[in-house]
Length: 333
Ligand SMILES: [Mn+2]
Image 1 (cartoon, helix red, strand yellow):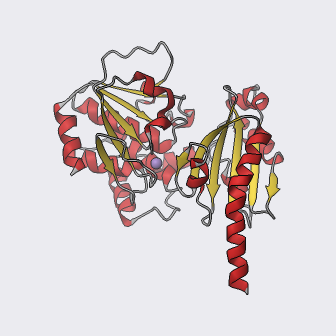
Image 2 (spheres, rainbow, N blue to C red):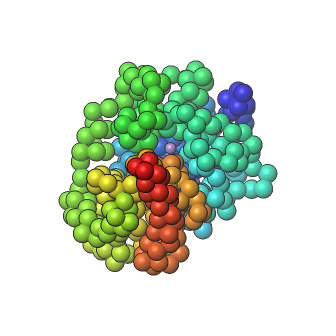
């Protein structure tokens, strides 16, 4: 139903602003670029704007340089009539991009987050999709425009990132079917695997060393905290590292249920990445601080210092760990 509405608006209307959540991941970036690609093919005016700069790791995607970082003096060459938000559970997650929206803008919400609040005028949501780009694949397919290498790589990147390289349970037969079509369409799947997951800069590897040195275990080894101070992030080496995937190292420790990566950012806020093995829903934890994401991967921002953020998170995660522990005790007795 909403697919028909979405197809109609894309075919008949114009002036599309494309955005996603702050700190966009590969699914957000691939998704925004794939939508931009489709709108270009349909000769529609479109611009991609996000609150924070995208990771350079995704610069192999065609059109990467089209992604604009929000600034107060940003000027679009057209007045947006439609907003397409990809991979964001609510509009607040776009942060300052909200300032660009005229009152009467039509909001199109494309997402797969279970926490999505259906905030759009058109909601094209599939909770069973492994990635937002899986949903966009269906949209492109139904538009009749043949996929090329560029669009195929946008979509493939979203899938690879959000399914943890076809590892998470959100990977379905359809995920593999789509991936096969993308490979046929020219996506460089080997290159993407090598580049995204087996290539690191020297600064990244050194940064990982620094991060792992900050490791702190809590609640009998169930929660692992790691953090970066702003002085390291801003420093000569820290500024050049890519932190994507770092949080998976503490998560991989046997017995750990939740891993938390904290990074001091400019505005007095701590950027928090949360990962869970499977017992704790970190989307709920992030939600307690106004953030969101998925049950096993979520993020939020907390005002204050690293240690204040840790204390608050420990309370929030700790009470969930206690529930698991009492459940385990019950099972034993
Ligand atoms: Mn996603």
